[in-house]
Structures are given as C-alpha cells and as structure tokens.
Image (cartoon, rainbow, N blue to C red; front, side, top):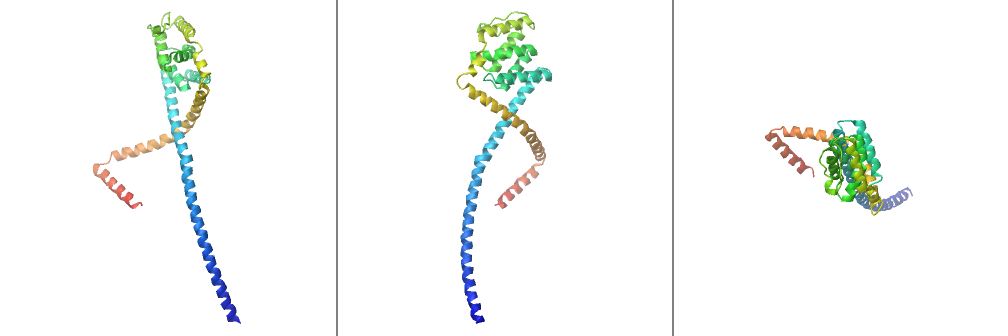
Length: 261
C-alpha cells in the first residue's frame, strides 16, 4: 500500500513539475517580450524628452550669453556705473512689453548711445525714439542708435539724410532737445504701433520666453564653466606631452576601444 502511494506521488509530482516548467517558460517568454517593449519605451523617452531638454538648454545658454554680453557692453560704455546700468536695463525690459524689441537689443542700442558720451537722461529720452526710427526706416536698432548717437554726440548730423535737422552745441541740452523734438515729429509711436498688429503678440511672447530661457541659462552656465575649466586643464596637460607619449595614448585608446565590445 505504501509503495503504491509513493508511486502515485511520483507520478503526480512529475506531471506537476512538467506543467510548472511549461508555465515558467511561458512566463519567461512574456517577461522577455515585456523587457523588449520597455527598451523601446526607454528609447522613445530619450528621443522625446531628453533631446528636447538638451536643445532647450543649448538655447538657454546662447540667450544668456547674448544678454550677458549686452549688459557688460553697456556697463563698460557707462564707465562701470552699475546703478545707471541697472536703471537702463529696467527701461529696456519695460520697453520690451510695449514693442517688438527684445531687451537685449535695446540694451545694445543704449550701449551705442553711451559710447558717444551721452548721459543717462539723454539715453532714457532717446531710446524710445530710436526704436520708432528703426521701425519706420526698417533698419536695425543698433544701426539707428549709431546714427542718433553721432548726430547728438558730435557736430556731424548723420540724420540729415532723413530730413532731420538738429541744432545746438555738442553736449548741450539744447542739442538733445532739438534731436528729441525732431525725432518725435518724424517717428513718434511707430514702435508701439508695430507691436499691436500682425504677429506682434507672438513676437512679444517669444521675447518673454527668451527672458525665461536666459534665466535658465544663468543657472546652467556656472556649472558648464567649471566643466570647461577642467577640460581645459586636461587639454593643456595633453598638449604638454611629448609626441611619443601622445602616440602611446592613441595606441592604448585603440586597444581599449577594440576590447570594449
């Protein structure tokens, strides 16, 4: 009786084991299939999420670089008067909300006026009119600022070709008033009017996103500069090696590359 029971158990256990093995193989196949699907999802996420983030970071760094250079140029033109620079930057940001010009463009134009020795009051009064002139004449903002700066800050009236008459001694308040009056008569309101039609709202939205990306770039750049400094040290170390040492580095790099796979 005992031997029959044991034999029956062996038969049942053996049958169950075979069934268990078949079930395990099916489960393994499903897991393998699921793993492959997850790899595809991972690759898709890398393409869909990581790549755009990297692209946005690159744009952010570029926008911050443009902004930082414009602000620095203005500071140098103002002979390092930081408080004046900050007030002019605030004006540029305010004008960005009313016109199609990004604040970095306006800051660059302010720097152009400052290089001709114009003071804060003159720059503040002239910049909106420079924007109006640039829009009316279809020219770059810095180009318009250059013409105005030469006309107000020197005895040469570079605006005469546009029918603008400027009178008064160079550096006098009378010459500034004359320029402001003439520019107002010719171009007043052009920059704000252009922002209210066509794709004006979209361009202003782009400028706002540009400011956001600048702030992101401001955060990213210090870390990138640290990495760049380390890479520069490595490059200088390699550059200081002898030709034979560099050759050995190339040989060992080739061996490692071959062994890697």
